[in-house]
Image (tube, rainbow, N blue to C red; front, side, top):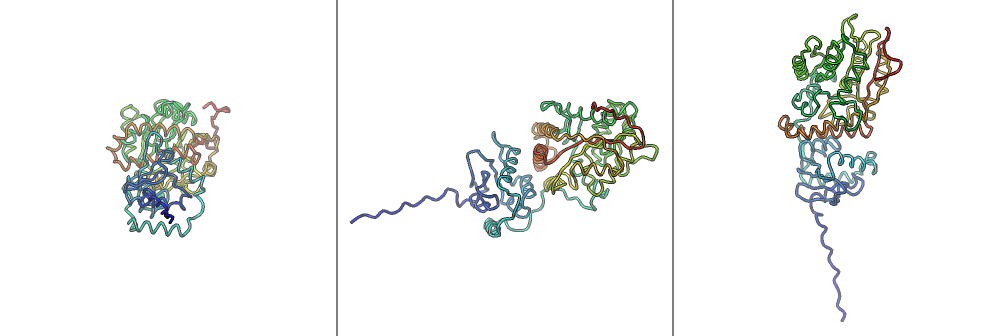
Length: 441
């Protein structure tokens, strides 16, 4: 009699009952195949490649999934990240920039931006969510998320939006920005130029482009922490008026004015740009506005452009430095609009030129500076990392995580061409201007 053999029993797949593995299977229709990350769940289970070829993402709490269920995509992921419910593990190979760059590349390669998941995939996801206990009412927004109320771009709401971002803490910004406190793109002659030098070069460039000389009456619209106002007075002898609606910024600049003995040359007003137009006959010799036009909104941009026109004398020069963006997220996307700059609006540079021309200004130069912003943000990130412990002491871990995501994401947007920044130089017709035939700026 011949003995029969029993087929060997296959061993169970390691981790197939763990939360990470179950999530990875449900996600297949949503991510177009195998998990493109190494996923670690709150129960200690993991799924996906473990050889370091992909970044590691930790789901430290089921609340991360709840946020993603209520806000699929960028906003839910950002909420989970800033609260620490989701972590991007950084090591010698992967950091936040590389992890996000990897995610963007996978999305492009797999065509994940188009089409909707199959209804069966949604049912499977809902079933797993129920089994994991993550269904329920939405969680409260993170404390760092903006909640701005009022009519869009009313003076009251604009003041609240600007205060949310710029009144965070002067000490906080001092720990990230360089000594000029210039919160805008620098002008870099090389990749290794110190950020302080690049910002000074930008300030000098602006002053030369608008033709400042000793005694020039100069208006700085949206003056920030006073980098341009102070530079124009100290290095070009200009008589400067700066306007801001951020009380902490005015307090900071006023202190620097006193420290440097510039009381007779610089005046900073806590004033909305719409109230900054001087009486006819008292227009300024030159006007500049550095990365402020993004905050006025699409509907109010013609008013902003008209303020620039009406504030400068005929023949005088106007310069704006402004970020540009194409696509469906003129505010920068759900994360930026919710955590950084509520109500911001960007557009392609050509559309901005159109608004300025409609206001009566003659556009003479458009100077693209996108690559410069990548280098500027690199300098800010270096200081961010150097001073991270102090930043946490000032504003708390959650806000620090918001800013890390903001700086890394912004750098990527400029690097990859999703955003730009330009200096636009104009003159007000009706008088002889002094722009040179050949630009030597």
